[in-house]
Image (cartoon, rainbow, N blue to C red; front, side, top):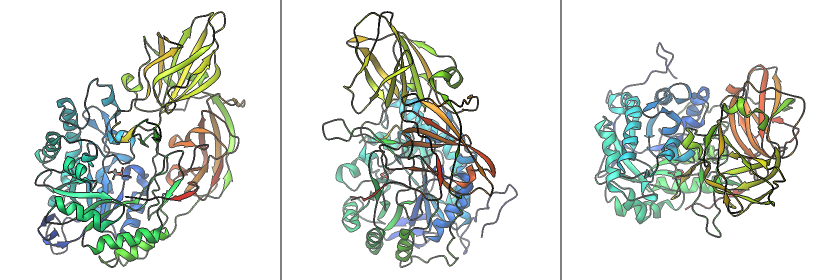
Length: 617
Ligand code: GLA
């Protein structure tokens, strides 16, 4: 049962029942919490992937799973409002989330980066860093370290009162994230460690890396606990970690119990029975664990990341992550207690005491219905309303150079005639470009097929060339982290570089002024399509079915639910949680970029695509 203080925040129990502060330490034999032997059985749950009105519900479900700890990253780019300034209110109220966890009897592990990976845009780094020429990310480049200091100046003061030594739930803080998978800069690792300790973080600090030699060597910090991230064969993986961590506790800081999806793949699942057996094997070794993810949640807005490890033949190329981050986790995207929940709970109960409160019941769902069409607005006709006045630049520039983080970006130039039709090509495209000649769609270019061109019909008197670029997630893992959006090299017509551009960032943060007309723009004309739906009853969870549509974005009552991409799949419904709906009229807006549909059904069940069993390492 939670108690609340006068601000309505749940109050934090400051001490264990015996009155000792609940700090976490370790010695040769293992972890100790408030002085007694302890095993961390943790579940990852990211507050930034859950509507804040549902934090308490999801944490309650997490506690019911039997775990004693919640783990969350803290994404720098989600909090930063301008360099050195950050927002910790509303959906970003980290202290509220952690205090709720404490009220449910959970300890917390916090991973503030600066890099977090996490299938999150740019691994949590702010997009503006990509506008700093010559900056080297995640190393001892003094400019990068100064940026890291600026972030820790913001986030550490939020964390300090929540540390276990001061009566809060935070028992441990992670330094960087799987750093050895990216680099090997010992000075940088030491800088991040110092940046935390010098600001007062005095709880247990640790690193987490893949259990491979290069990764552990690149990521560990002398004198700090090393933990491992993996999904299978726990005994072997932990034995490998043991070679580097000769004494003290072993911890799987990420035990991948499911997996995420990219657009264009099948939906990944990991069988409940097999995952539970593997968890049992892990816990039987005596090690601690963090289930990644216990509840995955949703990549709302523009926050989904992407993978890209190379463009050699056979490489998958750039792979944006889907909007759902269900992760086939024990607690489903809409809070469902899945068969995996029950299988895991049984295993966890063998090792730590389970709470005796009854399991939370299912949450209400909306009644299936068709949303009613209510007009459309072509995008190119409303550029000034969406993007203000364009800026003039000799060559195309990426959105980061114009101070834009997310959305679409529009480039316009004029090509003189007469001249024969020749292909237009884009050098340095992030991620997909829609080309128009005098307003008529002429083709699409994609970053995964960089040699493709689109024939530009010029005619006698020349042509206006419009290039509308859609950005998806920035790469969050691997060597190709600096992933700029829009156009970052140039546009050619044949071999001739095209110069003199008007550029308009379209961040799509406010669609309120769009005039809706009954005419529906056809295929190839990017447009907003408005629908309404009247809820006669109290708001409840729903799933918007986009399977009749091509690819684009979807808003509910002004909140961006995320990207959809039906032809590539696998996801065919977007989760619309109860707090976003209103009793009475609701507005849904679809920005369709390629192939408009007609129907927008609202469902009471998700469709994340055809499941395929993932093999994890
Ligand atoms: C690694 C990272 C996590 C996440 C998982 C895959 O372990 O540390 O942030 O990206 O992979 O889901």
